[in-house]
Image (cartoon, rainbow, N blue to C red):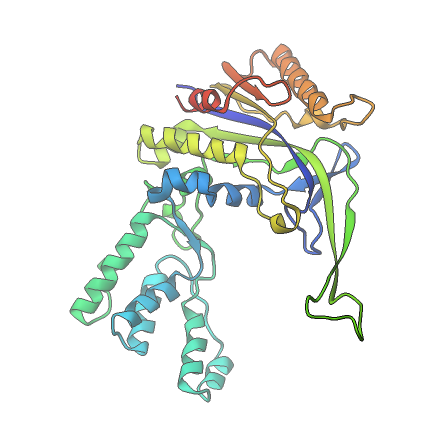
Length: 369
């Protein structure tokens, strides 16, 4: 069995703002002395793990990332007739297993005492929020629901032994792929089996501005013929290089040794990576795209990215077609690395929409078998 699976993707997006910075403009990075468009790995991973493509296949084996599990538990207690004070206490004990909870200051607590009951209760619920985002496995959510029912039946809060709710996440595919860190319970941390690089454009870019207006449909223009709204948003188009590495052995280990589950996860994840675009500003730009080129590699060799193929950016002088020029640069870099370091992979398979070669079905079979 090949330990490492590496995916090299070239995906072209028309004018878009897929992943914004703190000013609302497309993210960038400087590479090879030139400004490039960038889509963060966090944006890509979230788009893929929450996509319909991935969810349909792995629906019963996907975890939940949230700070608000304590509030969800509280609402469960309330719906089953538990009073506010007890629901707060018991929910806090359960949620506290997974991380440190927020606490209101003494001044804040004194202040909310003066509020009407409903407003006071809403403020108190802030103390059920976990400070750190926690990735809950399906088993853990099931254990929580079972404990809630048990507490209600016995009419008293959970015992210490009953609060052993943390699991190793053996069936949570997204935890197995992307890992989990629990500062308060490091024993249950999970090392990520999948690394995703920030996608970066293979050519230089200049961020442009879209000045737009919106018209009020009920304005008869008898007094004011101007726009009802004026706005501005940044955008750019780019051909991106993306790199993904999956440690199949670690993924299988994270899934409790379930090789069939690991195979399904790799196949579903790869299809999502090839087909699913980040969701940023999609309603404004409709910039959905499939990968135009994919090189998949399998082997025991130490993984390596091929981003250096684009250290010198692709420019109009290289080819009349950026896509074909990028494929040529990527293939040349792979071959040169093989010459210098010996074969960096045992097996390869490519699909190329510029030439119509390969098929997605064969690609998925190649990486998953």
